[in-house]
Length: 110
Length: 113
Image 1 (cartoon, chains in turn orange, green):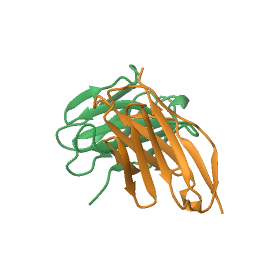
Image 2 (image 1 turned 120 degrees about the vertical axis):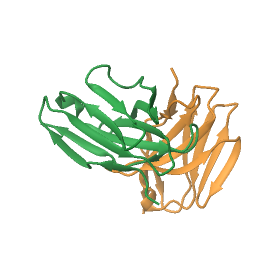
Image 3 (image 1 turned 45 degrees about the vertical axis):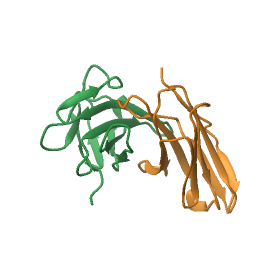
Image 4 (image 1 turned 90 degrees about the horizontal axis):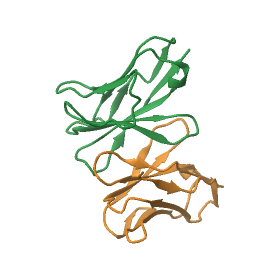
């Protein structure tokens, strides 16, 4: 059984702080890793993807991947109230499907 | 550059009727995934298709549910004889290649009354 684990939260951070979201996965053969943001009542929106060990930065977002530890994280710098949403971690290993975690609810407090 | 298009956005069906959900992937994408989401819950994988082929249907109930992705036209998720428990949001996603990023449509909210 391939699993993707996330802390469900809720995670609350003050505006301007760094939000750190974590995800672990069970399949060592996983090759592709994704972070989606989902606002209540809306569809998931892709915000980051990472394929190689290390860090990948895009604006205020940084994805970090450590395949040895089977761990992927998302950092959101200078958090804004508009970042309040559920963040979904997804992993694709054998190419047959994307395995999603249950999501972490983030609230940014003004 | 149109994204993934799903229709209808909202669908109401009486128990026992059929529901047909359509998904047109991003132009040039040949991989389609269907997911189901209940309120306050995560995304549950249903089926993965490439053009004219079902690759993985391990998440789809064996009865009443079927999916197709024909050579021409959108992917269709079909639910026969719907029951109240089928009420959920159904999302479709597409990707250009396997293992590459997938983009989601706006979803179809199915309500069974």
